[in-house]
Length: 97
Image 1 (cartoon, rainbow, N blue to C red):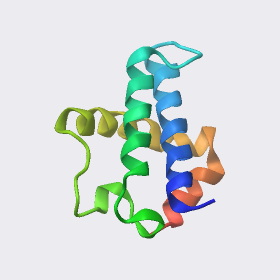
Image 2: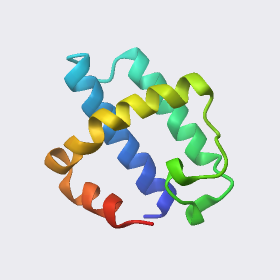
Image 3: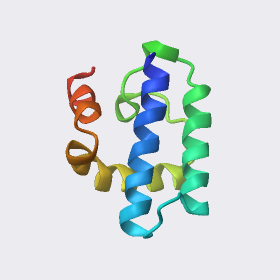
Image 4: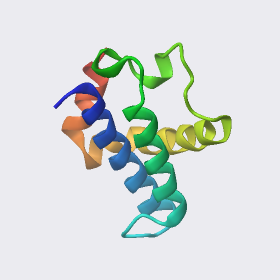
């Protein structure tokens, strides 16, 4: 699994966790589905490909400002909780560049 695929999987888990805990949904709600689709589209178009760094360290901001704020909110909430819900993925993130 390449870096882009791994990040798609990670962002999906984070958005699912956010939606489940904040919107009470077992399936992604419309708003969260839109955020996931937008995030995946941005990752697929990343000019750095599998050589990319973590998005918050990237010199290119490819998210629109409103979507950037939404994904930051999701990541601030879900990041610490990933260790409980997806421990191997959280560990890999902490050890990645």
